[in-house]
Each structure stands twice: as C-alpha cells, then as structure tokens.
Image (cartoon, rainbow over all chains, first blue to last red; front, side, top):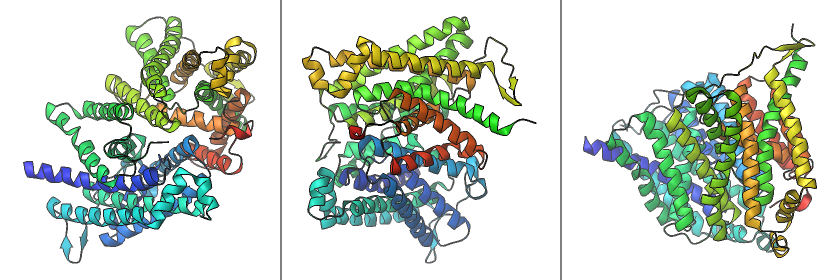
Length: 290
Length: 293
C-alpha cells in the first residue's frame, strides 16, 4: 500500500519534471514569459490519448503528440514573436484559452467536458506497462532522455545564443543572429517536451478532461521553475520534488476533496508569493525574472 | 420572429459594456502602475460573492448591499497593493515579477472564494421585475439598459477625472514619468494607492452588474480579466475612449461570431481577434506608439 503510494508520487514527479524543464527552456533560457505552456501539455495529452484509443502503439502516440505540440508551439511563436513581457504573457494566456475552448466544445473528437476515459496503458515491444512499477520505469526513461536532450540544447551554441538574445535582443541581432527564428525554435522545442509529458500524463491517469489544462494547473509548473531558479536544471529537479510533495500531508488530515483542491491552490499561490518576495532567484537561479 | 441582427447587436453591446467596466478599472491601474494586475479579476470575483453574501445570506436591503460591495472592492484593491505589490516595488521588482505575483494573487482570491462558497453557481436576485422589453422584434431587459447607462456615465466620469481634476493630472504625470513627477512633489506611492482604490471601485461596480446579469462562479475572474485586457489592447491601453471602444468591439465580435459557431467558441473568437490585433496593430486603435514595453 505504502509502496504504491510512493510509486504514484514518483511518477507524478517524473511527469512534472519533464514539464518543468521544458518550461525552463522557454521561460528561463529564452526569457519568454510563457503562460500558455499548460496547453502544450494538454495538446500532447489529447493527441496521445486519441491515438492510443484508436489502437496505435504508445511510442508512436508519444512522438506524434510531441510533434503536434511542437507544431502548435511554432504556430504560437509567429504572432507572439515581436512581443515582450506583459503582451507576451497575455497572448500566451489567450492561446491557452483558445485551446481550452476547443477541447471543451469540439465534442465529437475530445468528448467535451466529459473528457476521454479508458485511455489504454502503454504497450509496445511485447511489454505492457499496466502496473505502476513498470510505468515508473517508462516515465524515468523518458525523464532521463528529456533531461539529457534539454541540458545538451541549453549548453550548446544554440543555448548560449538564446540566452544572449534574452539578455539583449538588439546586440544579438547586430551580430547577425536571426532572433525571430531562434525564439520560434525555443518555443517549438519547449512545446515538444511538454507534449511528451502530456502523453505520459494521459497514459498514466487514463482519464483526461479540459479542466486539467487551465491557468490553475499552470501555477505549480510556474512555481517549479521559479523555486528551482531560472536557467537551473538541477534546481528544477529539486523544486519538482518539493512542489509535488508539499500538498501531500494535507491528504492525511482527512479533508474532503472539495476542500483539498482549493487549500492546495492557496498553498501554491502563497508559496509562489513568498518565493518571489524572499528568494526571487529560487534555489539555484542565475538570473532575475525580467 | 425575433430580429436576429438587432438581437445580436444588443447582446454584443451589453457584453461589451461589461467588458468595458472590467477593462476601465484594470486599464487605469495598468497605465499608472505599468504592470498587469491580473488579480483585478480576483477582486471582482470576491466582490461578487460579497454582494451575494450580504444580500442573499445576511439578507440586507439590495440598495445597501451595492455601495457596500463597491466599498469592499476598493478596500480589497487597496490592501492587495499595500500587502503584496508595495513591498515588491520597494525591492525594485520588474514588471514581470509583479505580473507573476498578480497571477498568484488571482488564484489565491479565486481559491478563497471556492473554499468559502463552493463550486456551485450562485445567483443574486433582482429586486425589480426584469421583464424584457420588445424593441423592433429584439429584446432587452431593464437590467441590461442599466448596464449600458452605467458604462456610459462611468465613461464620461472617468474621462473628466483623467483630464480635468488634479488627481487625474497627477496620475497621468506618474504614468508618464514617475521620477519627474516625484521631483515636482507628487508622491507616486499615494498615486498608486489612489489608482488601486478607484480602479477597484470600478471593479466593484462591474462585480455588481456581472453578478446580476450572469451567475457567480469562482473561476469567472480569469475569463473577465482576460477579456478586459483584450479589450484594452484592441482599443489601446491607457486611453479611456480606446478601452471602451475596444471592449465594445470585442463584445460585438463574440456575439456576431455565434452566428457561425456554437456559443462555446466565444472565448476562442475573442482571442483570435486579439492575435489579429497583436499582429497588425499591437498598439491598439487609440494606442500611443512608444508605449509598448
């Protein structure tokens, strides 16, 4: 019993970790105040769920989900490329509302507010990841690969140029860098990994509905990135563990779920405010939020 | 047979007026403080529940509950500024930090409403008979006429405040250049407090009308503030006529859009309009060119 609970927490940490490091790429390294990240997670979850409900292999579902998310990341980057700060935050938040409205109203495909149920657990190469332990291994393989790729990207020449563009776009432009393309690519890659995370989420929970992909669910992800510290991937790991575990003691107090939800949100919101106030660079942040 | 065109025109006008009420308070705060106060939506939500609590649970007279709600809203706005934003400002936090803080405060306020009142929909009953009036085969309720009138009066009052009074001039001075304004003896902190009080009071008026026209739900704040922000951007943030015009345009676009799409896509239509404006006219219709950050 207690083991099952720990495995559940570890799986959640893994899924949130991929989401956190992918947001770290656009928000921390790219400096893009991206409040629409949760919709890439949602798009990934829905695409993967729909494909696997139609009998496709999980690996295929995951890759297609990530690619579709990446495509939407690219699409969003076109109108928002010139925007900064407030305007970018609004535009990306607006995008997440469009995605939410489509998920909720395109009933024939997405099931509307009833969501999609009975999403099959992954099955490929003759292995079925039906029990949580095998799923845990699958999640951590994905975490490992995603972390490796993102940290390679961040430390590559490309990553350095992204950071340079974040700090001074004009200077980067004057050195002949195509900042439009760079920012576009940052958002695309960031969305790609959010799609992977969404695909794992759908396969793990086996039920998704539009309410899992709103601003309210963005707060913990934002918290992970800010607590971990902008542009710090190891900090993100630590922050993910902290953020997933913090509301857990509440479960044992015995609150009914109608109270548990809002209390958890209040806790996250207060934590976010406290971090911004007392330790704006989080655990290992190297730059300030601008 | 109802006249669909006229009916959609009326619906658009009413929706646009509500957005304009939300947007004008929000935009007043934005243009002076220079950061996005998303929590304005939270102020509206809590004020709506306050109205529900005073008029339906305690059972006080409706006409006493209205000024109390407006007072509650401005007090809440004042406190949010005092408790959360002012300490961050003294630490020279950037606009993005304040924006993230305001998102957190929005979630905080909405969660408090959810915790205290539950997720189910609340309604506030009108004390008068709200029978629709037929004009040219389209319908409008007395409440909707009240909303239109309130917005029109507020528009004139806000315009006068910004252009004619000393406070309005000081606000514009701080908005224009905070340091120069301080050299001339205008306390910027006082002006910030003032804009939060006035802006949130307008939010309180919006809360009263929204809770009468629609239902109260804990999560309506995000939608309202996003629509208000969108209206402000379409019209040009910082300009009172622009904000009203942009909000009305948004109301029309949403309602005429339902001619082609199901009404669930209203939000999507609003944001497609926003993206179009961000692409071709990012400063809005009445916006000032160098105002973009």
